[in-house]
Length: 479
Image 1 (cartoon, rainbow, N blue to C red):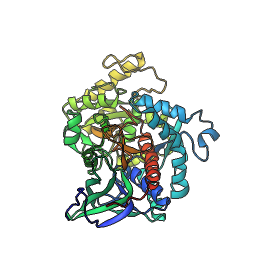
Image 2 (cartoon, rainbow, N blue to C red; image 1 turned 180 degrees about the horizontal axis):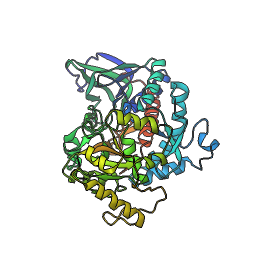
Image 3 (cartoon, one colour; image 1 turned 90 degrees about the vertical axis):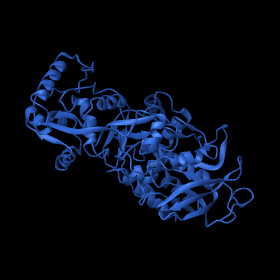
Image 4 (cartoon, rainbow, N blue to C red; image 1 turned 120 degrees about the horizontal axis):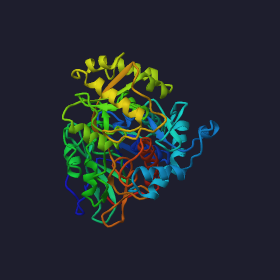
């Protein structure tokens, strides 16, 4: 259809009060909040099914408290919104905006309670530490549980979800006016213009699956690196928003996880143990059976060292004693499942494990003996790994386990600049009227690093804010 004199469509194919782009944590949270405010809401998702990266999240959510005060009643120490914020800022090396981080931590308990009480979210009974911080990690079985809880709230308030619909353009009324709608296309390339009477929320996730886009900001992250992300994490909504003046920040802050599945990149059930067993004395070796890095180094450093070995995969090595030391309610079932699925290998001896992995000769035995000696002396001669922690156990008794791993791009910490009301900010520092954003398509919260549960908390908290804010906008009638 021809444009109007102002460059906007003369006619619109359909309309809604609020158009939400993306159907993961942030998108469903925004849609639920807007629909609960009695606004008509249309959720557009480009993939064939909803959930995106949120659905394959490990199911952890960081909140310093909850409606049942489980941390307090179980005597698990002190915590507060302020402590949670301080930990988050430190994890991001102080690149995060304290105002945004403060909102995330203050609102985290309320958003969690909302999903439980209104969405039927079921959480595991146990609480876990968030890194070295407080016991604030709440777990469901997976991220899909959070997605479904949020979707149930949207359905109760009659929001409409449409999959297989990708964003192609945001319509803005001039260079300084409000956004008024979107152009989208379905899988058959049929194009439609949709009027957003009150506003638009971008909740499209990051760009970890787009090799060209991530290399534009971190050239080292080529196709040798897998990605933990689902294939729709390609970042085009960030570019589309930039085309109407949106500002961005922290786009080079891309997190690489060293423990993805060596073929798919996914963070599967085995990734949890490759990650955790290091704390109890596990090591990481190359295909030749040699350690190649301080196992407690930052994820990026481990990942670069793994790629530098020149051979995929690497192996996380640990023993039964370490599993026992870390035993939690899910440990036995999860490690059994990993073995059954071929995600982990088990042997009674180091030699047997090396043979199962195809490591030449006695290389793995030699390396394990060497590390056992380092641990006894509390001094790592090869990589200066700190070996004084009380949790560390020697690799001197079996059975032994190996988990094949390979680095994968995991999280893009940068994106659209937003303010404390989740409004998208333009290159001049002013909000773009009626345009909001939340989730991994935004920047400014996590900074240069983060702890995992915050990647669930932030999109849900700010999605909820975005939905409430856009619902309060006055209806746009000009087009």
